[in-house]
Image 1 (spheres, rainbow, N blue to C red):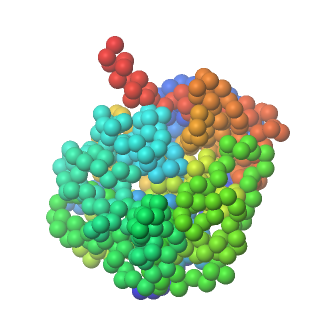
Image 2 (tube, one colour):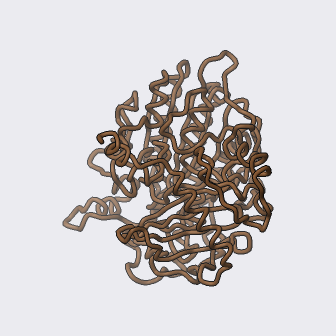
Image 3 (tube, rainbow, N blue to C red):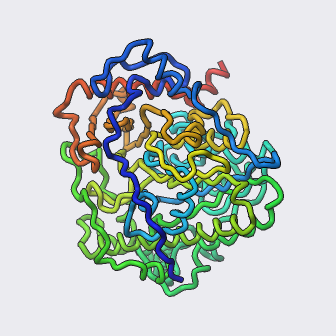
Length: 540
């Protein structure tokens, strides 16, 4: 099955000149009702209390912004179609890529609000998804890896449970939480995990027997992974994402007359890059664009980057040397093919939504759990705390939204997704949610929102905390066992250096470093207490 190229909108880059930051004195703390503020303006702009109160508090807290909540004409609740996509970078036609073929997601974007600067809170599947599904920052939940989310954050009402508590029928298909058994009571229907008999998640993506055997350790081989890429002449319906799409369509057909929350998670383009041959044939590998920024950033310490162990775990990847140009070409080809395959499966679900006349009664939220490097900044996969790793696609459609067909450059975080869905459907936002509803942006794409977006990533004893402001990305690597002493800093001027190729922390400018350090600390101070600390306080 070939996919016809869609109309590719000329996307707005994430690093263009957007002014100098008209809410620069605001801090993350102001989002949570705290009064701390930073007096060092990002652009040399002078601020005073009157000006702050006039433009800052209302813009940051949403108090004077237009409210927006979706509703069906008949007054019945809106449905939710929730679409997480694994390892999806903003490599879509609607994000300005002129080569990739994603007609279905481009069509969704044409009637949605496209977020140009949405950032995950942690660039790894488990903690990123947990932040979305619980509304908690990783430092609140304590989820930094593959821990079971409900074992760490089971005391909070997760996103699907909130909708279930309010009369929605909930279903989970494919990968939503990282662990398929997390928060099992939140789902009315038993979670569907697409695995063939005798197969585990290690081999689920493969169609060729040699890759299946390598993954499952057949014949005495060490159990691990097969090839990083696979081209197979296999029926499309054999692939796990096609199963998810089929199950999602069946759910829509069976629940069209009742409010539902359907989470359908798609695995591609996560490694391995395995898709039917027809999707590989959409691209000439020699015509695919190379990375614009192939080298590691200058001025970084070794712990700030990664040896890309995730990719090296696959059987056909070198363990200790650089990739050949041919291997790099093959991997990029596989990623593009996988994105188009995922687009086609999601398109089937969106087509069913239209056919069943549910599209105008359903809030659709599509998001990539984090981005993915294809040789950019000298790495493959993720596991760093850089701009390209954290910036992820986010597309939101809601019936009646005023910002349909537009895009926004507002800075948003993944902890904002849960409260946005709740408020969009007229539900109360749980007090445990650390984020804030993005509904003002659904009414006005140019509305002020966050002055900074926060991400973090742990490597050994070091935790990197990073903020993205209008112009800068600033990170501190803190040694937690040593009381949080700063082991290293990163500063990137993304206006002048959109690829983040030069770490300016060692050379200044000192006023910017001081301002960014203060703003980062304000963001961290604004995070509500960790669940463990809250539990201990209650015991006391």
